[in-house]
Each structure stands twice: as C-alpha cells, then as structure tokens.
Length: 203
Image (cartoon, rainbow, N blue to C red):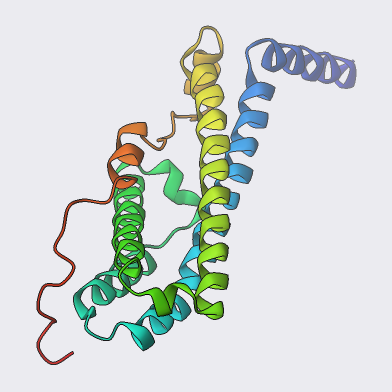
C-alpha cells in the first residue's frame, strides 16, 4: 500500500513538474551552458593568436609601440578574468568580461588600421595567415555569441513566464545576463586615433 502510494506521488510530481516548465528550464539551461562554452572557446582561440600577431607586426613596425602595448595589455586584462561556467550567473562579472573582450576587440581594430601604413607587412605571408585566422575567429565569435544570446533569450522567457516562473522560483532558476548589441556596435567601429603618437618610454 505504501509502495503504491509512493509510486503515485512520484507520477503526480513528474506530471506537475513537466506541466510547470521544469523540463524546459533544465533543457534551456543546458543549452546556455553549451553555447557559453563555445563562446569561451572562440575567445580563447583569438587570445592564442595575439602573441604571434603582435610579434609579427613588431618586426615590421617597431615604432608602433603604443598600439602594440595596448593590444598586449587588453589581452592581459581578458586573461585576468576567471571565465568559468559560473560567470553567466553573475551579472557584474559578466559585464566586466564583456567590457574586457570589447576593449580587446577595439585594440585589435586599431592595430589592423595601423597595418595599412606598412605595405611590406601586409604582403608578409605569415601576417596574411594570422590575419586570415583572426578574421575567421572573429566570425566564429559572432556566431557563438548569437547562439548564446538566443539561448539566453529562450531561457529568460521561460523563467519570467507563468506558470514556469513559479517553478523557477521554487528551484532557484534566475535570469541570466546576455551580450548587448549596443556594445558590439561601439567596439566594431575603430575610433579616430593618432597611431603615430610617441612610443611609451622604456619600450
């Protein structure tokens, strides 16, 4: 009798959770984790390309110390942030991560503008290969970010909608931060900067 009653309670609980969005919350949360892992993977790929890119440019444009230093410092700032899976549960940490990646994108944009002044560098096979890899990685970053944004949008909709919002409250599911389009538009346009400013003393 007790075993039968327990079985019935399990069945009722399962039906209740399914009907109140628990399974959807779980599946959309897992999709966010997978999408976020791909975002980190592509950002890491970009970071790994930067040392070789900086060294190649340095070989042809030693006077562009400030631009090269900015790229190196931006990469270092990105590396100082612990980009763990839990970062997407912390709005402030996520904002810092996004800003750091945005600053690196901006620094790289400035570097590629500088390259236009050095025909020998532009024709260097090693540089062309690195540039192609960087452009390909930037495209993959954009795709990965878009997938993450869509996954977060779907998940957040479930968290905020009735009656699944009640289930989310009970089990501790909270909305997650996403990338902002405004930030992407800002960092995609290289600012008007004098790249021939004096180098950093001691560099």
